[in-house]
Image 1: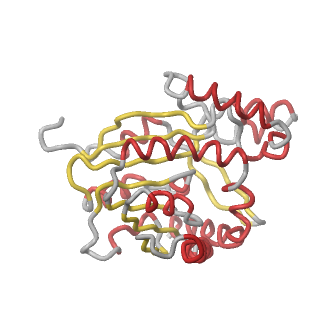
Image 2 (image 1 turned 180 degrees about the vertical axis):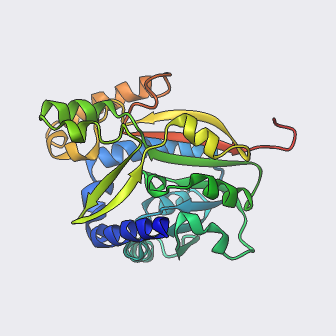
Image 3 (image 1 turned 135 degrees about the horizontal axis):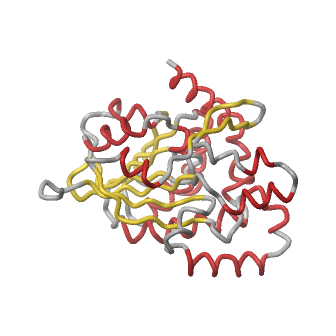
Length: 274
């Protein structure tokens, strides 16, 4: 019951911010910089014609991108407000896109129509950080995927160097270390809900034995979190420089899980794989 309540609170919070989410994050300079990295990686993992299940689809920005590259997307989100924004955006920008929307929590994958089977799964920008039981999600995904299918998940990290330094310099140690315990209470438009920050090792265990970890890529190591947008927007050349630094260090051990986000590529094990 607690998990249901937690997700209901998160869904309601995102309902409230759904109309302004794109202007706050999606179309921000930092948001576009981080999303571009995820998109480039997605095109190396998912092929045209693939059937993709997107979890936590938000306003549909990623679904439109994947569909524009020839993929068939089933996009889900727990927030009715986000689903409404996604439907409106798809109708306005690409009504012919092969995208089907479901108002659905990540923990409810089994409730999708039984005929739906997927070649890959995608979740961008921390949607899965709102899920307390990722093991259950992994088991449900395994039922819908063939061996060799890929998962590409972008989650908030536990130890974000930018965030720790930023808030310490402002004399706010509670915010500086809010992720370090592995869970915290997030506040969005006046509503609170829990957010979880699993480590790479914890994620690997949660998705075992059905899936193996292929790679981890840092997102936003030098590029700051989105709450620095107002300042960073006045320094576009600096953002470009920080993006170049990210490109160099995003796969370095020790740094790749210290950015604002981390991008995990997992693969469903084949029968012969231990």
